[in-house]
Image 1 (tube, one colour):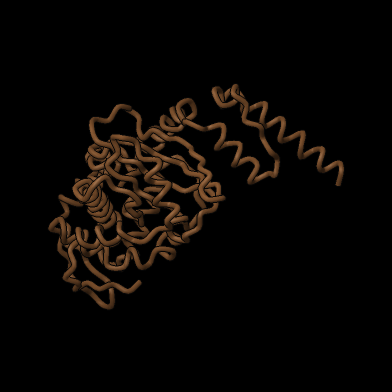
Image 2 (tube, one colour; image 1 turned 30 degrees about the vertical axis):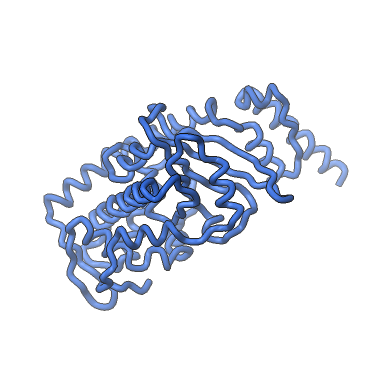
Length: 307
């Protein structure tokens, strides 16, 4: 990974430009359609941002004004939109911008916001330039938080890629989800342009200097007391990471708007078995799950017999 350690660019300018990256017109139209009346902006992220594909499920974060209503956030929903002959599908997380900013800055116990939004995202829709600026500031906070922890977890001297790798390895291990070994390497290799030069900017933006070494290596000048404080900060979040994510999954199982349609689409996509979304299944997706799984099993068993 080539690093320009002497770039005069500021972190804010870097993040602002990154959020303005082009996205497909259909994505912008869908983002605007998803925005409620109190929305300030809609962030688009995930693999579809990188590839430009409209296949699968598009990932959005809708950021709203006002206080956060849910104690366990974000609120998750699934949407389908028939747009110009194409069915667009979206998984949408909704939360207050103030809560998003606090989480990105590391002020809350949550690890998912800053770990997710130090990675690429695009501002697919904004209410006005002031709202867009506030969202860009929050995303820049995510870069600061992630960079701080990266140098606390990483080696005394290393390349920026070494520090990002240490960060993502730790955050994936702390969250309640299954990822293939080496997931951190795939993130970095797929997003080289995004991470190129980001770590030095994020460190300097918060007064953390570094000595330049051979090639692109750096030695962050992080006092021992500050490193110890950061590691204590991380250990608390690391301990609570899996329980907190379990709570979110439990909440989502009863409050995920459109869960039945989302599950039906996923099942048909992976098994080829079409699932009818009845009004009862729409209202009670968890209770309906055993019957759906039985239907899939019988359908596949019948298919095996026919073969």
